[in-house]
Image (cartoon, rainbow, N blue to C red):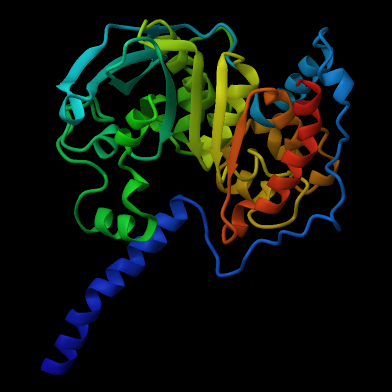
Length: 372
């Protein structure tokens, strides 16, 4: 009996770790033991074929057609005219990082009426002589985890008292994914002369298949978003509104960054909001940089069934016939051009299909070349 009890106690942490790993994997990206193929020579060029001259034409007709098609097929409408308002910055830490800068927070409201949504953006401003570039990040974890030990606002509107990454689950996640799975490396941004801003995307629109459509339908704009990806993309735009109004930020140097679903949102934001000067989209996968026609990894149809709220309802009409979809993700990257894009992928992340992401970028490169 004693031997059996000791056996269980020794193995209990391992069992808990396995459970935590499975939980984190299910909510993030599914990694495998296989490597993604780097072979592209035997792959067909992405379809539809890009009309580079038309996309780069000053008349904008082809660009507008592509945006409209993406709205009709995948993302739903960009929330044109959706009200955005924000208050004054609240000082969180005037001597942040041993006096290298300040940590401040602003509440940003999107929409109108009782259904308007408010999210809190925390920004680390470096001490600098003039306006600085800024990187805006959407995060999976709330601000309590991104800025631990700082009295920032939690997702429920209270002052943070701990975060999602505390205790054994947080320890396990950092052991697997690294120190910066939630924590922001602000010192490195300061070293590069950058400000860093982040907000918890689920505070704007919750990442819940039942709740998200209800929240979006009640936001009170002239055009409400119908997909969480488009709503989160608009969150980047709303964040840019607040930052470009601050004299400490260079309004021509606003970059956006996201991982997985938030990488998808970053690419969409850069295509629709031309103020965005650079994009970092890490493992953005399907509905991001990976081709919808690809049958490798998660695939768009599987993603749409698991996370239907990420896409507009009409995207379900294309499940089972993705080879006929009238638009694909190399065209999204073409819409982002000439804005610089960094696409991050891992060879073991077969789930998000880095091969087709590379091919999409390769196809869109012609537009970047034409745009100079």
